[in-house]
Image (tube, rainbow, N blue to C red; front, top):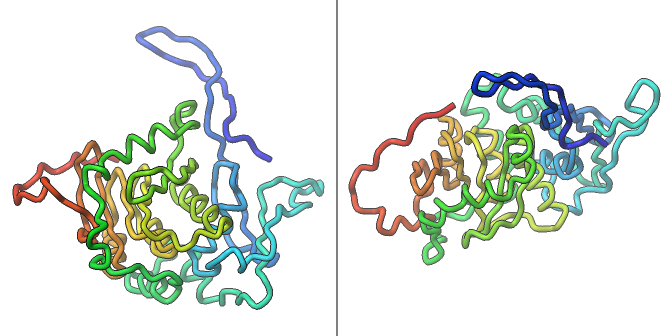
Length: 294
């Protein structure tokens, strides 16, 4: 099985001084996901939690809803030309009676951000496949999340990023309770993979839907990440950077609470503000715009 990190030679220039040294890099390898033996998708990922990544991906696409839907998850032997196991091909076998996705779903959902579909078609695909409808924000009255608590979560996530400390090259996703307790954290070269690993681990533990939780991602909030939160029944998605327009559209339509630019107590709330306790921040004064970063 592949390593999470690898060592490479680097020429390091610091303050006019040049030297040669080894550097620790995050590993990146392809993972092919097969469904009942049929190739379905390929993603570039950091090795580790591959089974959780595969089943979490299938949750986000509406194929799986519980651990009972899975008969087995295995690495495919003989994937390499010499017949050896590369540990880069995972087969998910569905339990008897669990329907396979049709061709339309494969083409409309499994290629997500690169499929070329219009926004309405993408929203319709999520609406059709959702197994865990989010409760309306009004149902959260009395259990709203204070925005000052929300502002503490990026530091808590950063403190839990063990591999990032060694490489500086990983995204992270953290799952928190509405009281700010860190339930799980996964790191990966792709933020969508980190989320799939969290969702997959929850499915394996029989914890779906992930109601009353907050999902925090270390970068942007794309449509794909909003989709994954909705499909897992996660009511609150927060990101340290910007959301996309289609992510906001999905949040508004599905009832997802969507927060962007979450940094040091500052944030933009794009949808589902009724789940949040604005407290002293709700004074009617305009807050300065957060800085745009890449």
